[in-house]
Structure formats: C-alpha cells, structure tokens
Length: 172
Image 1: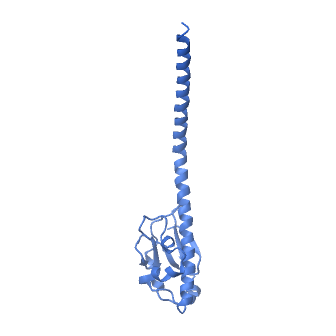
Image 2: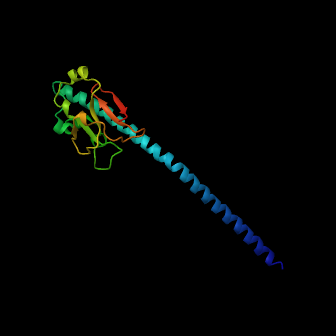
C-alpha cells in the first residue's frame, strides 16, 4: 500500500504540470492572436514613415540637381538616374518600402520635366513632384492628372513630395 501512494502523488504532480504547460500555451496563443494586428499596424506605420523620409531625401536631391543644372528639373525619362548621385543610399531611397521587392513605387510628375525649379517653386508650390504610384517601374512618370492612385499607407493615404519641398500624406 505504501508503494501506490507515491505513484499517485507523482501522477497528480504530472497532471498539474501538464495543466500549467497547456494553460501557458493557451495564454500565449491568445496573446499572439490579439497582438498580431497591433504588430502588423506598427510595421506599416514604420513603412509609411520610411516612405515620407525617402520623399524628403528626394526633395533635397532634386534641389541639388537643379543647383548643378542651371535650375532645371531632370528630364522625365531618367529622373531617378539623374538624382541618384545626390542620394546617400539611392537603392533604398528610391523604393517605397510598402511595395513589393524589385519595385520602386514612385512616379515623377512628367508635366514638370525640364522646368525651371525656382519658377516652379513659386508658380506651383503645391503641385506634386514625386508621389506614390501604381506604376512600379524605375524612372516611372505620370501626369498628375492620373491621380488619385489607390491608397498605399495607413489611413488610406498616399504620400507626395510637393514642388515646394514639403512632403504630405494625401487621402485620395
């Protein structure tokens, strides 16, 4: 009779330990299900912030390009190639982080191609220069009349670098 008692205690301890482990797994599963959307939203917020930062850096690159080219904006057919020397990390900066890999996701307002940058800043300060686009190719151009594009970022918004150098989040 004395041998049955220790086995019974061992079984009870093992059952309690199993219940604790299963309960912990259940709690972890619930937390994962609850926190997963929060983490996804935080990742998209980080991508949207990086996109706006990319556009700000492009704004500086356009200004430096214009200084070196008699105040002219780059030609539409090779605008990314033209501002690449003015960007510290062009491969990262010229890609919107919210688009698939190997895509770019930005388009240049072809109506501004070759314009005098200083005149454009005075005459058209709130016109988009570069913006989120469904055209994902390198050196993508588009007349601004094709806007709005489907929203890409949180808050159903797209981002745009305006001619005056500011970056805005724009709802379509």
